[in-house]
Structure formats: C-alpha cells, structure tokens
Amino acid sequence: MLTIKDIAKESGYSVSTVSRVLNNRRDVSPEAKKRITEIVAARHFVPNNNAKHLKQNSSKTIAVLVKGTSNMLFASIVESIQKRVEATRYTVSINYIDEDDNEVEEAVIVCREHKPQGMVFLGGNPKFFEQSFQKVNVPCVLVTNQGATLGFENLSSVATDDEAAAEYAIDYLIGQGHKKIGILGGDIVLSHTSKQRYFGCVKSFQKHQISFDEQKYYEKSSFSYESAYEAMKNLLKKAEDLTAVFAMSDVTAIGAIRAIIDSGRQVPEDISVMGFDGITMAEYYNPKLTTIQQQYRVLAGRSVEILLQNIDWNVVPMHEIVPFHLVQGESVKKINAFNAGD
Image (cartoon, rainbow, N blue to C red; front, side):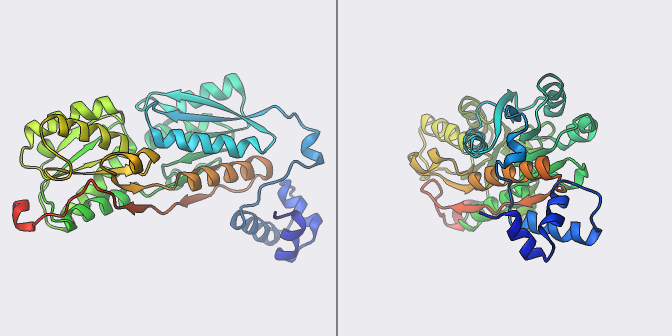
C-alpha cells in the first residue's frame, strides 16, 4: 500500500512537504504541489485511517445519487461502491430518482438536508449541471458521463465514451452484413446518455454511407424490460425489413428479444440483437448477448478513489475515460450482404 513516505521518495520532496500538500497548506512551492499531486493522482493514493482521521467524526457520509431504478449496470456499480467505501471511515447513503429527473436539484436537497462529505452521481445530464451545479459545494464524481467540459472545480468524472462505443456497435453490425438496423434507446432530448449513443450510431451510418431513417428505425424506450418489450413491438410494425437491432442497454435488449420471439421470429436467425453494458445476465441469457461491455468495477473503484482524494486531500478534479470491450455472444448472426438489402 502506497504511503506518504513512498510519495516523498518518488517525488524527491520531504515527508513534511508531502504532508503539507496533502493537507492543502499554502506554505508549499507551486512546483512541489504540482509534482506531489501528480503522483497522488497517478498512483491512485487513498489515505488510511490514521490518527488524525480517527479523531474526526467517524459518521461521515458519501451520498450516491442514482438515475433510474431498472438500470442493472448501475446496480452493479452501487454494490461495488458500497464495498469499497465500507473499507474507509465513511458510510454510504443511496438515493434513487427517475431516469429523466433533475439530478442536480436533487443533489442540492440532499446536501442541505443530510450534509454529505461528498457525492457520486450515477448518470447525469450536462444541461442540469450547467444550470445549477454551482449550488453543490461538496466534492463530487460523475460516473458513466463525461464532465471535463463542464469546468467545475469540485466535479470529477469517470466514464465510458458512449459515442465511440455506440459507433463501434453499429460498425460491428454493419461488418456482419446488416444495413437495416433498428435502434432502441431513450429520449435523446431528455437523456444525455441516449443522445451520445445516438450520435455514435449516426456517425457509423454516415461513415459507411448508409442512410438512416430515424422515424422508421428509432424507437424510444426507457431502460426497463417492459418498456423495451413494447418499443420492440412498435419497431417491428413500422420497420418490417430490419435485420438487426441495437439496444442501448442489455436490459432493453432482453426485453426486445422477448418481443421478437413472441412475434413468431427468432434471434438471431431472423433478427440479430446487440446490447450495451455487459451486465452479468447478458452472459447467461439465451441466447447469450453480444454486447458492448462497460468495466463497472473500474468505474466504481476509480470513482471512490478520486472522491476520497478530493475530500481528504483537496486534489484537483480528474476526468478519466475507461475502455469498453466488445463481447461476442450468440445474439448476432452474420448475413450475406446481398440479402441485407440496399
């Protein structure tokens, strides 16, 4: 485990200088502060429960604000965050809101009523942050959405590149011979995540010079089985020629598969389905989902590490992109490009 002595040795500065930087003292040269904070960030340094901390109030809380109650990826991230925070002097409070609600206004209320030491946002809309995040005065980390361009001094972010990942998903389907591809996703006006993934899809279609009729091939769905089931039924009615579907979550993909099967068709023999998230159920579902996998343990782990650094040592905000992976399952079939249509 990295210690203050290790940081001193690596930085070339004394233990006392490192301590002053970590305690945000002003009697340190800009060069020393820059070098030491770079090492703290790069080495993922998180303080131990030392004597100083034990003298402080041990009932400090980190609030986790979760958008949506059916997002299984978020459920996995929350569980991982809880386990990591339990090893520190902090406790966790979980707060759920609807996926289209204003998470920043809710955060203002949580800060006023519960006074947490820090906050983790699972899901977020930059528009809401731009409007009122200045009212939130504790260190925060936005998880699964990028926050670097927002420019707040108390906001870090750890995310997957949603646009690039969705573009990769459509690239993959096109590479398997599909051209008539339906998309199931959220409201691209209200949901920033859905908007970014939609942009990625369109980027892929344009790159491959494939026209995309949004009215015909895009159907709105919340990230739940029930909503996805109904959305897929609507998509089947208006796009009878589609050969593949990209669902913006694995939960959506599973709901869509059931609707396809109930319509008398098979996956992937008649229609291929690709998901997004890489939840555990995707691996055990029949057929096993082909999906874009987000590294939820890395997302959770880095969010906690960064937040504790921000709270305890006043480290500057950090913004990280976590790589995604393609998981090839059984739900996508390679087809003859000639049979895929024009």
